[in-house]
Length: 255
Image 1 (cartoon, one colour):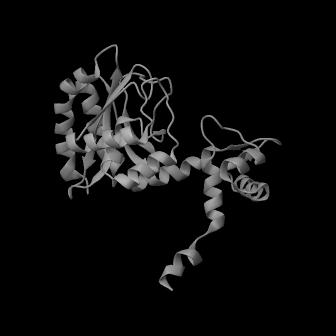
Image 2 (image 1 turned 45 degrees about the horizontal axis):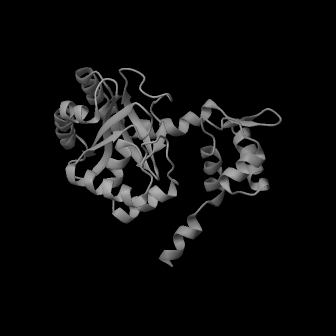
């Protein structure tokens, strides 16, 4: 009977509504019913009901052809930010790290096959796409993503990578699952990760895990810079000690 409880308690309508919200992004800011049906694998009728319900309660708007999300959706993300202490805890540490290194720093969590930024201190714009709290990037080719994948069970990490259907974003991007597994094993052993122009040409990133007081990896943080200012090796040599110090300071503070 206990095994049946999750099925009885599962709200399929809520799941569908959230899936509809999630199919909107920077590249798809306005969608038709057919677009949403394709993106979510819902029937057109189900997609229509979800969109009309979201419109009725103020989370979406409709211009006669396209649906768009409204600012009300920000309440969902703000609810998490307001209910967890981690972003507020790490923010001042990231700002201090950025001031000392003159490079941008960020912290993130793993969500499926992606990382989600939860805090950021930017010294300068380092990517063609703007980064901010809530930004999502593929985990397999980012330094923070590889750190978080490296400290998970290898089978789980591999499943997450494959779920994201990795593709090359630059000529340097590693997409082969076998090579990625070897890279993650090395990251776990050395305790940090350097990604050299795999996410975007010219961008180098150095990341480390954030542990809680029990020694569990709960997030990752990084420093990102441009290859014109320093090589990947130089970045590791210059900034790894400062990052290790920040990691040690935060560990007893994170519950």
